[in-house]
Length: 112
Image (tube, rainbow, N blue to C red; front, side, top):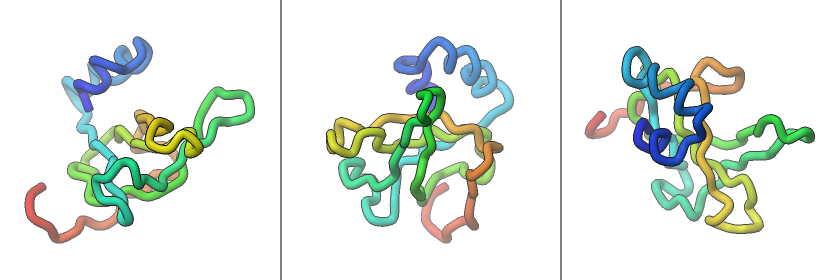
């Protein structure tokens, strides 16, 4: 997450999140979905812009996200333009405290 923001994030995202990620905030990379696993091209999560274009509404579910209980922010992948197929996929920094974010119970799995 840190490198994604560092290399491809806007100046605004960098100034907001990089200091926190270096000191007091854990992040999670939210790509996997039940029906697609890590096959991003099969992603069902969508991102719909508001009428005035000032924000997006994300709709979907992510699973098997390491550090999700501890995360203060999620790098969430969603398709903002499904008509473009995989070329419509983009990433969003989502504050864990925002309304609508729900972290489920941990899965019993290998690894983190």
